[in-house]
Picture 1 (cartoon, rainbow, N blue to C red):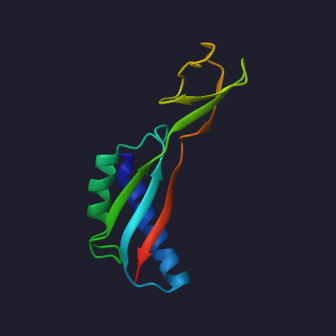
Picture 2 (spheres, rainbow, N blue to C red; picture 1 turned 90 degrees about the vertical axis):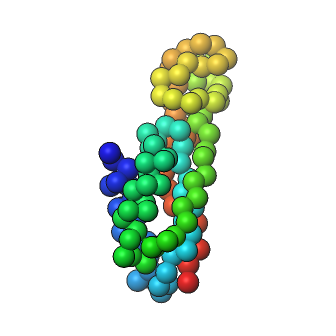
Length: 113
């Protein structure tokens, strides 16, 4: 379950930024996650709750913003929506797609005290 290491990394980032920016408590975290990031959202929520115990993010609310997947087709030069890697182009059927959006996993915003 790599969601546990992702949650631990989020808490580590929060703690590092707390020392830099001077906050003492995290009340809310907004994460952007694309469909190609290979993250099970419910597992991440569970792991986040577990790893935040006893930290400055204990009882913090985790909000997940789902981003769309998108790719550029090398064959027809169209930008097309995708939901998973190795989808075909919805315009021409080619499998020569270069992912341009949807593999993100990042902290977008924090609510802190």
